[in-house]
Image (cartoon, rainbow, N blue to C red):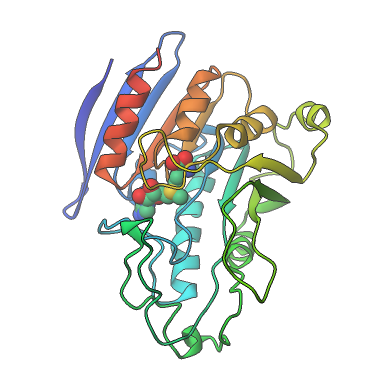
Length: 293
Ligand SMILES: C[S@@+](CC[C@H](N)C(=O)[O-])C[C@H]1O[C@@H](n2cnc3c(N)ncnc32)[C@H](O)[C@@H]1O
């Protein structure tokens, strides 16, 4: 079953909500809109677990007004993500967990365009902020790794989050970078944040998998229908749910993309809510979730 309705938050932001009931009180909801605006509509303490991967800094252009990721300054990006996470903190249950996947970006400062990535039309930037000379206004030297994930994590700690673990996701078989003067990147961060000192956590799954804060999980090349969202591998979502979400809990992904978090949550008996700014990605998710049951 699917219902769709328009919610107007303010004069410039219209949000479309679609939802389905799956029996046994299990439900899904998708909101098309800006994560920060939509989150403000949701009640506090609603979710047991949040699993999400926001757009990385200057990695892709999703070509949607209001998208996060193409800020002129690192500080602007960090603040935009942290603002969304402020609202996530509010809607997370007192014993809930957030798994936040972030990747880093290099500052090139070459002063010329990054060029065209033939594999993805979504990467046709003009001159990216990270290619402009001037050190991004914070004195960065050419070729430095910016440290974006940790800048976000530190900002969030300053705003009240408790960082419990910095998990390394070793992206086995990921396409190698073509660099010659440094190690090629093969991992990303998954920060495990909580709201309070006591929270739901099932250690057994880590012990069974014999992996603690270093997770070897094969990266997924693309979503089934080739949506350019850099989709989560199902296994990554599954592991977060196994350790951080009660069996019938409610799960949120405020940057839902192709909806991997929602699909895996629903397939394992949970309820799921997704927020996504891109209309086509929302249509894909609605179609995909309607096929599930
Ligand atoms: C890295 S992708 C998420 C991929 C997802 N984990 C999956 O499995 O497909 C980030 C998503 O955030 C969306 N996005 C960008 N800015 C947004 C905003 N302000 N509010 C909500 N979604 C946004 C993009 O359209 C993109 O689909």
